[in-house]
Length: 139
Image (cartoon, rainbow, N blue to C red; front, side):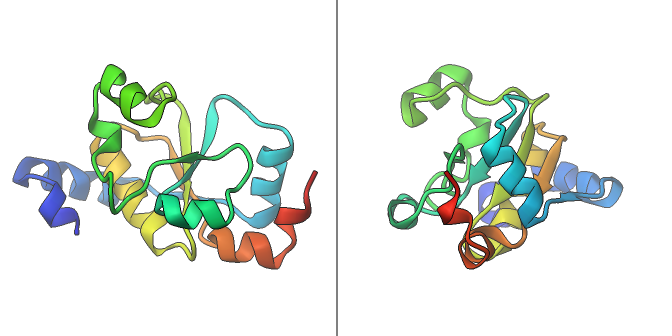
């Protein structure tokens, strides 16, 4: 999928980023803390499609669907706000990606790196783990 979205030079940059950067991994308790005490510099990014988010949306997360909007973070700030209705995250912010089970989150994290977002993380347990461990019961 990344090959169809990225040009040759972007793929080369993506490969360099992947080779030199270890991705920070978040666990359920880390995400729970971020939901209970949001931090404007650390954003939860749900890369599931809008129809999936309608079923359950993790509190405080923004939705940037990987399949239908893979180039979201490559948009200008104005275009991003027009499309998503929120300000575009600053490249200095930490973006923590999740999806249903973690596969799309990893692809989105790698794509974000290619757009200049070097401060990224993954919640590999994603929505499945969040719901399994009772995250949906948080107030």
